[in-house]
Length: 188
Length: 451
View 1 (tube, chains in turn red, brown):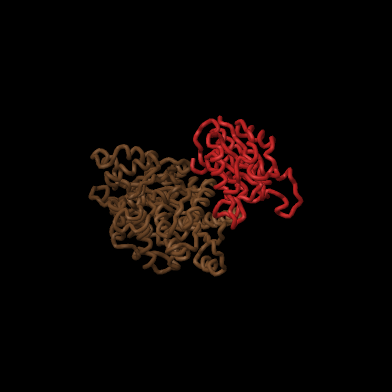
View 2 (cartoon, chains in turn orange, purple):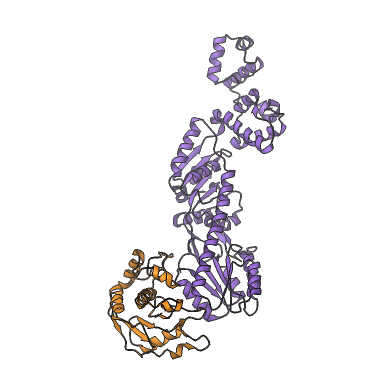
């Protein structure tokens, strides 16, 4: 199985910690390494009118920065991300594809007027990273609200869901990791 | 391509900006929706042919036909679709216009994912409730209009026992019986007693639909499939999804349709006329016929494979003349039914009139009996139906049988004498010039009962 590479993008106050690497390693059963900072320049993705970073362009920069890498790429940043049409995203992935991004920008307690809690922010970031990498492995959003694949557009909902897959999503992921084709939820 | 199933949620996105269509499509696909996107009104209307869509996200500001104008056209094509307007130019005026035009809600670009997620959840809840409401109304009306088979005879008790037994399964049932014996009523009883009762029973009268239209009636058609097909239409098999399809007079269908029918019954999949998409439907089949299918089989008019596919569990409804003891009960039932419908105080039937009904041959079975009672209810003077309220043929041929054998003539004659004497056995015996014991024996032999 090709290794998974975590790529820090821009200045990051929540480091791509070894804890995240070991979590991803155990969930996706793959070698995980962390790229040195500065490999991807986020400036090309900056939209001056919105003062935000286009996640589609960041993903493009990621693939261009590691053209020979065959494993999945996870861009991790504290920049405010968006995809066109949406006000913001906390994470974004190429469905059944190679790349995913996660941002800690809107996961911080300070954004909502609360005292900062870095441990909580890190936990949210890890959940979102697993969620987006789940999409990159061909998993759909899940209706079970405790499953890590449950769609969470607000931090409260991220806090409610666990960091684990439900039995059904776990089975689908295992099938994908074993080389099977995805069984889309609701269509199978 | 995945086969569309009834529980797959679907979204149509109409927006002139490619990047917005692309982002929203990806967003909803990750949620497991069936998604299509259109860049303008013309494409959106084309996409409607591949509907129905649960939710339509519609941009207000588009070149050419505006979103507000398109909203009206989309609502005309599918009034049940939930339309959510999107625009980059948020203004109270356009929002009010959209909502007045029947839009469910209104969101602004760029879309807040949290807001979109809430609006969509509400929209789908609304859609599910509306769909459920339509289904329950249809079901309620079918329950209100449904009648229970009436009958206390041994034969009818057996029929009802068979119906209740087979209702618990999904087995294909063939109901045999003469015209007017109540085959559809038994089919409805089976459906109403089974696990599919909360879904529709869809009757198709195969003999009443012209051969050229039966295919479209059963399988539906796409827009433009033939002259006059202005809109896509669902077929009866699709409408029966989750429920039961009742194929009445199945023995009359053509050889070509028999092939189509066999395939659908085997695969539970079909294509609409003029379509290329395989439609799945989960239905139970109950069919009925008054035709001698076995003879048709021998003559090569009915396919053997289809016969065996349909004739899994057979229920034979005896003709009314073979279960005369049911007639008084049925008469009471129809009097109650029509006295309530006509608000008329006719509540009973005179014994002589009932006797005529019991002795009539009933070639048209229960349907004929119901018609006779309905007619009599119109003519009768409250509180009861008299012999003169019955049709001419009944009063003339009130005794049975109508052939010319000696026993028939004797039976008819004895009965008329009994009627004339007011069932005075001594007087009737005198008139017949036989002793009373012989008359009692004859009464027992012919099964006469004092009215």
